Image 1 (cartoon, rainbow, N blue to C red):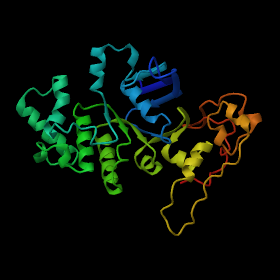
Image 2: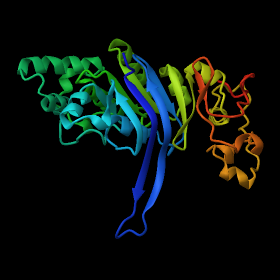
Image 3: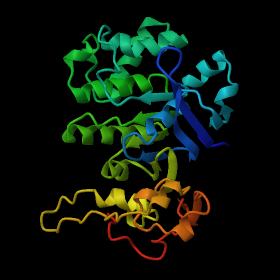
Image 4: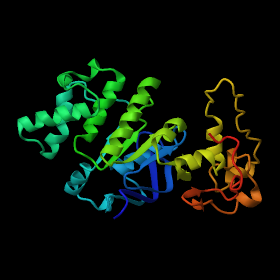
Length: 331
């Protein structure tokens, strides 16, 4: 049986400009991304803002087209699907967006918001059956069914995100894409939503792509973590393995910025980035200009490929400076 999501050598470029806005320009967003989401797995995608995480999610969801590579969802290549075929696939593939307020129509109450997917796909035509399903859906995300007639502005941020999750679950999907679903919430509410997502994924046997910039959140929720930088995957491993034994300098740099909550421990020194020769800008490795381990003789010849350096641990670095030692920034 194929993996729920298979992405191979994916390339995505945004083009802007035209007749009235000056010369056209291209911005490469995704460069040769290869990734797989396994059955009943929560895969975390981590990286700094602007690295292409959300664009990758939109391509998988069919919200954005792509210029090269292949995207398969449940064994079906997105580009070959007809409109009817994609509508059928949509029932199996749902999304929870970052901002719960902007993702909910303020003119619709909760009953209408949760019923809309059923109206589109012709489900629960019987009024009594729909009413029962709505109540069960509300309870499954920790909300009171008595609030079905309320509007989004009458709820808190955490409650609105629960409504968004309930809407994503209405069609009983097999794959869920969560694009930073807790970044706009308070810390205490974040914990509630994360616990809810974890419980739901296990109870419903969901495969989930979870996008975040927070390693602590990814560590709590995810089975595997992939690290993205400038549209390329630089490292991928089981969550604990990646956090305890980071193999790429960029992953180590991200971990060096993670705050230590224990006041008894000394503050971490950030990873120092010395002056890099100008030639590093011509290196095929995208991280070379910021890498403290850059060596022209080793790094310049060819673009580093994502390859397995340990069982289940892939890394795109020709030097692999931490292969035989534990990083001092392990968490």
